[in-house]
Image (cartoon, rainbow over all chains, first blue to last red; front, side, top):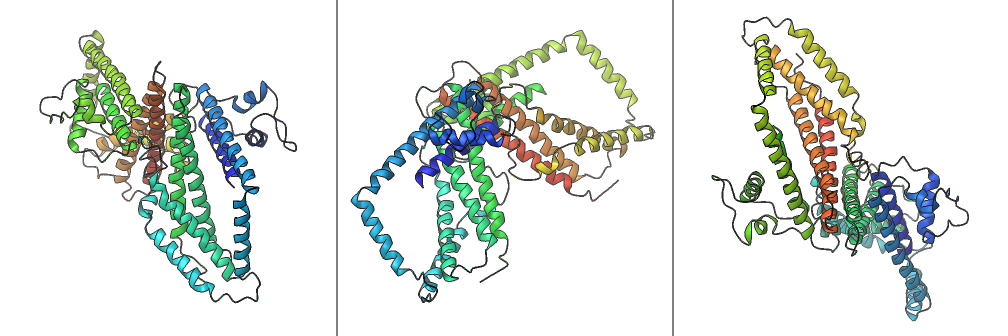
Length: 270
Length: 270
């Protein structure tokens, strides 16, 4: 999970750098190449993906139209996120051989035996739990600043864009929590309906908006983090600043999308 | 006009730096002090404005809560825009003594005698001109990408945020032109109605949105320009990058506001 998220974050940031450079819309092949470069650490495309055209090496293909600052920012992010991904991979491999992994596996087995996976199993005991989950979700959403989020261009997400505090934006916390509660609520619904629940488009769209919120929030943090690397050039730092602000506006856009999705009355109340 | 615009641009950028630093809402006094610092080159408050509290010098008062990067970015912008303002002032003073000024003054006098300023003067000749102005405005607005602008968070304004081209954003041009045509249309209306025109809120709101568009566009360009100063620190460059992106999003927000104002049907068609 962690490994994949670093890869996705890198891809999001590299695509944003291209978009911000006003590069022509990327051909699908280039996106493949970008993703492949992220996957393999930039050395070679994975077997099965199209090989990038070698007009001046992979770097030339990937960043042909970028300024020096944007290209350097991209290379820096690639280095840092690939390193983080490799570390996550090692940790995962180590965990597989550890006693802690076996303890977790045992717990999962116990949990699985408790969940009524058979259609004949009684689910009545789950109703109060599902109700409690929904209540927590409703409360958490009620605490969100949805009125602000519903006003486009409220410029709220970037408010701490230059704050000296390097920790993640505290204003994102409640939204991350709602994302988890929304997922819990959806799972509870699935269990209660035994897989025959009608697809609730509202829940689906709202959940997608919050996933986008999480991705953009973490990408913005990665750009800000990269800007703290010692001895980078001003051009690199400038590009990272633009990139950070761009991703924070994605955060704001995702909140707006969530607000729009959520204010729609559900048509199929259970 | 030019002198004042540099001052307003500096104030806009300094306020944005404070907002982006998550500083508490500025007390009115600090805004005064900021403006005074801009007016006097940061040496002393103008007579008549409140003196800033001297807790660690003017810089301490103004940027107490800013990071080093934001503070340096602010100082750099202050230096560059104050210099530009001083140059504009000198140019204006020189022009006052030049033969070119007298030629312009003569032209204005001739024009004034041609405009029917008296209520009794016939205005029929103006109708075709006013109609032509309105037609040009309608055509120019029809050419604007209003459908995109009407979708909040379309991320269009920042598309060339990292492009190597240092010239102003070409995508802003049509909007600037509409701003001028809208003003021309409003003036024509005023002349035709001889000052008794009902206030058209739609024209007023749309015009304000386009003024904001122009201000944000120029502020973003000033931040990008400052980032090209040699030998700035990475922290300064990062802050200028965030600031540039922030102002480009203001540009996008202003286009959205214009689209919202314009799509409303005028209630008082002449």
